[in-house]
Length: 91
Image (cartoon, rainbow, N blue to C red):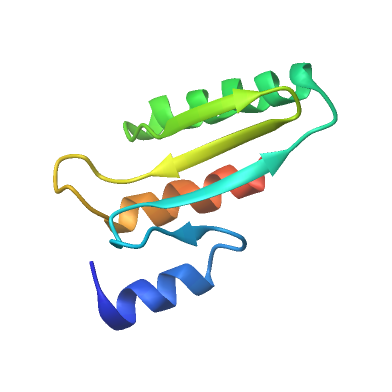
């Protein structure tokens, strides 16, 4: 995915960053403690499982980072942006 469509989709998801090679998007979320970060990653996991689209998740005390890409095409698809929007709604 490149060009105009990529630019338009990025405008629709606040705070997500495009990788330098335009193959994935990521966002770091902040929380008050480890428990909140863990609960968030559990909710992300549930959404991802229902969507059949699984992000890379890193979390620790007070933070979680989500990276989205479509492994089958080795780059971004519209599904990555849909999942990003759904993740943003649960924060």
